[in-house]
Image (cartoon, rainbow, N blue to C red; front, side, top):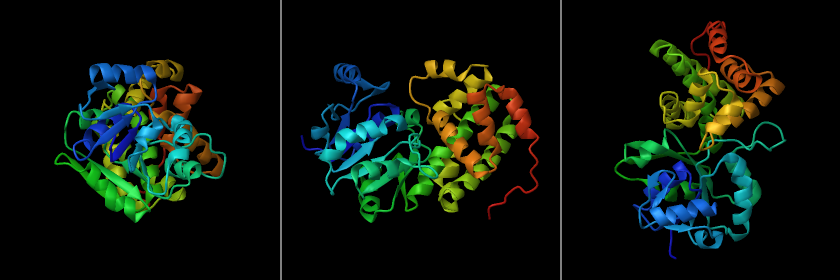
Length: 332
C-alpha cells in the first residue's frame, strides 16, 4: 500500500475528511470496530456516507502508518486508547493533525489539556496540528462549500497539510495559535447546546442572535484565560464555527439542546445519540475549571446545571435573560 494520508476513525467527520483527502492523494481510512469495517467493505458506505472507492479501508495500524500525514478523528474519550496503539509505530516524520473538538477529560493537572497536548504527551511528536472551523460533516459529505483552519506551531505542518485537503469546494486557512484554535472549537460546542434549547422553545431570531453574541463574549473570556489569543476566536474556527453549530440541526450539540427543550434527561439523550456530542463532556470539564478559578461564564454554568443537575431548560433561559450586562463588548 502506497498512501500519503491516513484518517484514524470512521465516524461522520473522519469519513468526510477521507473523502476529501482522496481527491488529492492516495488515502487510507482506519476503522477500529470490526463490524463497522465489515459493513464499509461490503457496502461502500461508512457513517451514512458513500465512500470514494479508491479509499483503502484498514484496521491495521502498521498499514496506516505508511502514510506521512495522519488525521486522528475519534471521540476525545477514546483518543488516548487509540493513540497508544499507534505511538510505537510513529516516527519524527509523521504529522498528526486531529479533528477532535473536545478536551482530555482524564487530565488532572492545572487548567485543561487539549487534544494536541494529549497527542504530544503520548507520542512525543512535535509535528502536531488540528482542524477546526465550520465543518459540519453532513454538508461536507454532500459536497457543499466549506472551510477549515489548519492550526499548528510547526511550520512544516502549516506548509504541507493544507495542500492535502484543499479543493474547489473546501477552503483551507492556517493559524499558529494551536491552543487558541482548539479552545475555540471546544467551547462553541457548549454554546451550541444552549442554542439548540433556545431553538426548541421557538424563541425567535432576536433571541438566537443575542445568544450567539453573548456566547462569543463568553468564549473569548474563558479562552483567553486558558491561553488562547483573541484572534483565534474571531476567525473561522471561532465565530465562524459558532454561527454554524448554533444554527444547524446537523450539529450534534445543537441537537442535544433541542432534546433538552423537550424535557429529555442527559441519560435519555445519551441513549439517543449515535455519535459523541463533545459539548456534553466539555461542559463538565470547563465548569470544573470555572468553579475552581472563579470565572464568570453564565451560559456555560447554566448548560451545566441543565445537563448535570436536572435544572429545567426553559427556566435556564429565563435566568440568562436576567443576567445583568452593562457593556456589549468588553474584550477589546
